[in-house]
Length: 253
Image 1 (tube, rainbow, N blue to C red):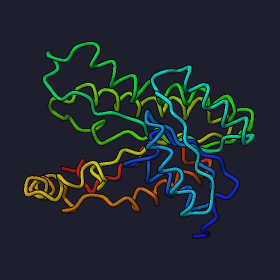
Image 2: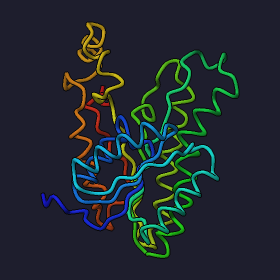
Image 3: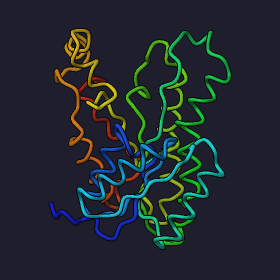
Protein backbone atom coordinates (compact mmCIF):
# COMPACT_ATOMS: atom_id res chain seq x y z
CA UNK A 1 0.00 0.00 0.00
CA UNK A 2 1.28 3.46 -0.91
CA UNK A 3 2.29 5.03 2.45
CA UNK A 4 0.88 8.35 1.24
CA UNK A 5 -2.37 7.06 -0.17
CA UNK A 6 -4.31 9.67 1.85
CA UNK A 7 -2.03 12.62 1.11
CA UNK A 8 -3.88 15.95 1.07
CA UNK A 9 -6.96 14.39 2.71
CA UNK A 10 -8.41 16.17 5.75
CA UNK A 11 -9.90 13.91 8.42
CA UNK A 12 -11.73 14.50 11.69
CA UNK A 13 -11.70 11.67 14.24
CA UNK A 14 -13.75 12.21 17.37
CA UNK A 15 -12.33 10.45 20.40
CA UNK A 16 -9.27 9.98 18.24
CA UNK A 17 -6.58 9.90 20.92
CA UNK A 18 -7.21 6.53 22.55
CA UNK A 19 -8.70 3.11 21.97
CA UNK A 20 -10.40 2.42 18.64
CA UNK A 21 -10.32 6.12 17.80
CA UNK A 22 -6.53 6.17 18.09
CA UNK A 23 -6.33 3.28 15.61
CA UNK A 24 -8.26 5.37 13.06
CA UNK A 25 -6.06 8.41 13.71
CA UNK A 26 -2.88 6.38 13.40
CA UNK A 27 -4.04 4.74 10.16
CA UNK A 28 -4.80 8.08 8.54
CA UNK A 29 -1.67 9.86 9.81
CA UNK A 30 0.49 6.94 8.70
CA UNK A 31 -0.97 7.23 5.21
CA UNK A 32 -0.43 10.97 4.82
CA UNK A 33 -3.69 12.58 5.92
CA UNK A 34 -3.98 15.68 8.07
CA UNK A 35 -6.02 14.62 11.09
CA UNK A 36 -7.99 16.69 13.60
CA UNK A 37 -8.84 14.82 16.78
CA UNK A 38 -10.93 15.85 19.74
CA UNK A 39 -11.76 14.77 23.24
CA UNK A 40 -12.75 16.16 26.61
CA UNK A 41 -9.12 16.20 27.72
CA UNK A 42 -7.11 18.66 25.65
CA UNK A 43 -3.93 17.61 27.46
CA UNK A 44 -4.30 13.94 26.50
CA UNK A 45 -5.42 14.71 22.96
CA UNK A 46 -2.57 17.19 22.42
CA UNK A 47 0.04 14.73 23.68
CA UNK A 48 -1.23 12.02 21.32
CA UNK A 49 -1.41 14.49 18.42
CA UNK A 50 2.18 15.62 19.00
CA UNK A 51 3.49 12.05 19.11
CA UNK A 52 1.65 10.94 15.98
CA UNK A 53 2.73 14.06 14.08
CA UNK A 54 6.37 13.23 14.84
CA UNK A 55 5.99 9.53 14.11
CA UNK A 56 4.47 10.00 10.67
CA UNK A 57 5.68 13.43 9.57
CA UNK A 58 2.20 14.84 9.12
CA UNK A 59 -0.11 17.22 10.99
CA UNK A 60 -2.31 15.88 13.77
CA UNK A 61 -4.06 18.64 15.68
CA UNK A 62 -6.09 18.45 18.86
CA UNK A 63 -9.28 20.14 20.02
CA UNK A 64 -11.12 20.10 23.33
CA UNK A 65 -14.72 19.21 22.50
CA UNK A 66 -17.62 17.72 24.38
CA UNK A 67 -19.37 16.00 21.46
CA UNK A 68 -22.75 16.25 23.20
CA UNK A 69 -22.54 20.07 23.00
CA UNK A 70 -23.52 21.13 19.50
CA UNK A 71 -21.99 24.61 19.88
CA UNK A 72 -18.57 23.07 20.58
CA UNK A 73 -18.97 20.66 17.67
CA UNK A 74 -19.89 23.47 15.30
CA UNK A 75 -16.91 25.55 16.39
CA UNK A 76 -14.42 22.74 15.76
CA UNK A 77 -15.82 21.83 12.35
CA UNK A 78 -15.83 25.46 11.25
CA UNK A 79 -12.22 25.88 12.39
CA UNK A 80 -11.01 22.75 10.57
CA UNK A 81 -12.79 23.79 7.37
CA UNK A 82 -11.41 27.31 7.61
CA UNK A 83 -7.83 26.12 8.20
CA UNK A 84 -7.72 23.48 5.49
CA UNK A 85 -10.44 24.44 3.03
CA UNK A 86 -12.27 21.12 3.05
CA UNK A 87 -13.15 18.03 5.08
CA UNK A 88 -12.78 14.67 3.37
CA UNK A 89 -13.29 12.13 6.14
CA UNK A 90 -15.28 12.13 9.37
CA UNK A 91 -14.99 9.32 11.90
CA UNK A 92 -17.51 9.44 14.74
CA UNK A 93 -15.77 7.37 17.42
CA UNK A 94 -16.24 9.30 20.68
CA UNK A 95 -18.24 7.21 23.10
CA UNK A 96 -18.89 6.11 26.64
CA UNK A 97 -20.17 2.85 28.11
CA UNK A 98 -21.93 4.56 30.99
CA UNK A 99 -23.52 2.86 33.97
CA UNK A 100 -23.96 -0.89 34.24
CA UNK A 101 -27.09 -1.84 36.15
CA UNK A 102 -30.66 -3.08 35.54
CA UNK A 103 -32.69 -0.87 33.21
CA UNK A 104 -35.30 -0.10 35.90
CA UNK A 105 -32.61 1.45 38.09
CA UNK A 106 -31.16 3.72 35.41
CA UNK A 107 -31.91 7.39 35.93
CA UNK A 108 -32.84 9.69 33.05
CA UNK A 109 -29.63 11.63 33.50
CA UNK A 110 -27.56 8.44 33.26
CA UNK A 111 -29.30 7.41 30.06
CA UNK A 112 -28.98 10.87 28.56
CA UNK A 113 -25.23 11.02 29.21
CA UNK A 114 -24.61 7.85 27.20
CA UNK A 115 -27.10 8.59 24.42
CA UNK A 116 -25.98 12.20 24.02
CA UNK A 117 -22.35 11.15 23.63
CA UNK A 118 -22.74 8.01 21.53
CA UNK A 119 -25.63 9.07 19.29
CA UNK A 120 -26.17 12.82 19.40
CA UNK A 121 -22.43 13.48 19.20
CA UNK A 122 -22.26 11.56 15.92
CA UNK A 123 -25.39 13.31 14.67
CA UNK A 124 -24.05 16.78 15.52
CA UNK A 125 -20.70 16.17 13.82
CA UNK A 126 -22.29 14.56 10.78
CA UNK A 127 -24.74 17.40 10.39
CA UNK A 128 -22.02 20.05 10.49
CA UNK A 129 -19.59 18.17 8.26
CA UNK A 130 -22.28 17.26 5.73
CA UNK A 131 -22.70 20.95 4.90
CA UNK A 132 -19.11 21.05 3.62
CA UNK A 133 -19.14 17.65 1.96
CA UNK A 134 -22.31 18.49 0.05
CA UNK A 135 -20.64 21.59 -1.39
CA UNK A 136 -17.58 19.50 -2.30
CA UNK A 137 -19.80 16.73 -3.65
CA UNK A 138 -17.55 14.20 -2.00
CA UNK A 139 -16.74 12.74 1.40
CA UNK A 140 -16.64 9.71 3.67
CA UNK A 141 -18.46 9.47 7.00
CA UNK A 142 -17.62 6.49 9.19
CA UNK A 143 -19.57 5.80 12.35
CA UNK A 144 -18.11 3.52 14.99
CA UNK A 145 -20.84 1.51 16.67
CA UNK A 146 -20.28 -1.80 18.47
CA UNK A 147 -21.40 -5.40 18.53
CA UNK A 148 -23.56 -4.09 21.39
CA UNK A 149 -25.81 -2.84 18.59
CA UNK A 150 -26.34 -6.46 17.54
CA UNK A 151 -26.10 -8.41 20.80
CA UNK A 152 -28.19 -8.06 23.95
CA UNK A 153 -25.82 -7.12 26.76
CA UNK A 154 -27.13 -7.42 30.28
CA UNK A 155 -27.11 -4.23 32.40
CA UNK A 156 -25.97 -2.04 29.48
CA UNK A 157 -29.28 -0.78 28.12
CA UNK A 158 -28.22 2.84 27.36
CA UNK A 159 -25.07 1.71 25.55
CA UNK A 160 -26.86 -0.93 23.48
CA UNK A 161 -29.70 1.42 22.53
CA UNK A 162 -27.29 4.18 21.50
CA UNK A 163 -25.36 1.81 19.22
CA UNK A 164 -28.52 0.42 17.61
CA UNK A 165 -29.59 3.99 16.91
CA UNK A 166 -26.18 4.85 15.45
CA UNK A 167 -26.31 1.90 13.06
CA UNK A 168 -29.72 2.96 11.79
CA UNK A 169 -28.65 6.62 11.55
CA UNK A 170 -25.82 5.46 9.27
CA UNK A 171 -28.29 3.92 6.83
CA UNK A 172 -30.52 7.00 6.78
CA UNK A 173 -27.54 9.28 6.20
CA UNK A 174 -26.20 7.03 3.45
CA UNK A 175 -29.48 7.15 1.58
CA UNK A 176 -29.88 10.90 1.89
CA UNK A 177 -26.27 11.79 1.03
CA UNK A 178 -25.83 9.34 -1.82
CA UNK A 179 -26.69 11.86 -4.52
CA UNK A 180 -23.84 14.10 -3.33
CA UNK A 181 -21.21 11.35 -3.73
CA UNK A 182 -20.84 10.98 0.03
CA UNK A 183 -20.44 7.44 1.36
CA UNK A 184 -21.59 6.67 4.91
CA UNK A 185 -20.73 3.37 6.56
CA UNK A 186 -20.51 1.96 10.06
CA UNK A 187 -17.99 -0.27 11.83
CA UNK A 188 -19.17 -2.48 14.68
CA UNK A 189 -16.07 -3.69 16.54
CA UNK A 190 -15.93 -6.47 19.06
CA UNK A 191 -13.25 -6.60 21.74
CA UNK A 192 -9.92 -5.04 20.78
CA UNK A 193 -6.75 -4.80 22.80
CA UNK A 194 -6.36 -1.22 24.02
CA UNK A 195 -4.63 0.51 26.90
CA UNK A 196 -7.96 0.60 28.73
CA UNK A 197 -8.66 -3.15 28.69
CA UNK A 198 -5.18 -4.68 28.37
CA UNK A 199 -5.00 -5.54 32.08
CA UNK A 200 -8.36 -7.37 32.06
CA UNK A 201 -7.49 -9.59 29.10
CA UNK A 202 -4.21 -10.58 30.76
CA UNK A 203 -6.07 -11.89 33.84
CA UNK A 204 -7.46 -15.40 34.19
CA UNK A 205 -10.99 -13.97 34.05
CA UNK A 206 -10.19 -12.18 30.80
CA UNK A 207 -8.65 -15.29 29.25
CA UNK A 208 -11.74 -17.30 30.20
CA UNK A 209 -13.95 -14.65 28.61
CA UNK A 210 -12.03 -14.92 25.35
CA UNK A 211 -12.21 -18.71 25.39
CA UNK A 212 -15.96 -18.71 26.00
CA UNK A 213 -17.24 -15.84 23.88
CA UNK A 214 -14.81 -15.15 21.00
CA UNK A 215 -14.66 -18.03 18.49
CA UNK A 216 -11.28 -16.96 17.07
CA UNK A 217 -9.88 -17.27 20.63
CA UNK A 218 -8.24 -13.87 20.84
CA UNK A 219 -9.09 -10.18 20.94
CA UNK A 220 -8.62 -7.90 17.96
CA UNK A 221 -5.39 -6.00 17.40
CA UNK A 222 -5.31 -2.28 16.54
CA UNK A 223 -3.77 -2.87 13.11
CA UNK A 224 -6.88 -4.86 12.14
CA UNK A 225 -8.98 -1.76 12.74
CA UNK A 226 -6.41 0.32 10.84
CA UNK A 227 -6.92 -1.79 7.72
CA UNK A 228 -10.68 -1.29 7.93
CA UNK A 229 -10.19 2.44 8.52
CA UNK A 230 -8.22 2.81 5.29
CA UNK A 231 -10.66 0.68 3.32
CA UNK A 232 -13.60 2.87 4.33
CA UNK A 233 -11.65 6.09 3.74
CA UNK A 234 -11.25 4.91 0.14
CA UNK A 235 -14.73 3.41 -0.16
CA UNK A 236 -16.02 3.29 -3.75
CA UNK A 237 -19.30 4.97 -4.62
CA UNK A 238 -21.12 1.63 -4.53
CA UNK A 239 -20.15 0.93 -0.91
CA UNK A 240 -22.50 2.95 1.26
CA UNK A 241 -24.95 2.24 4.06
CA UNK A 242 -22.97 -0.86 5.01
CA UNK A 243 -22.12 -2.25 8.43
CA UNK A 244 -18.75 -3.95 8.83
CA UNK A 245 -18.67 -6.22 11.86
CA UNK A 246 -15.12 -6.99 12.97
CA UNK A 247 -15.37 -9.16 16.07
CA UNK A 248 -13.58 -12.47 15.60
CA UNK A 249 -16.91 -14.22 15.03
CA UNK A 250 -18.50 -13.23 18.34
CA UNK A 251 -21.87 -12.32 16.81
CA UNK A 252 -21.98 -15.68 15.00
CA UNK A 253 -22.65 -17.65 18.17
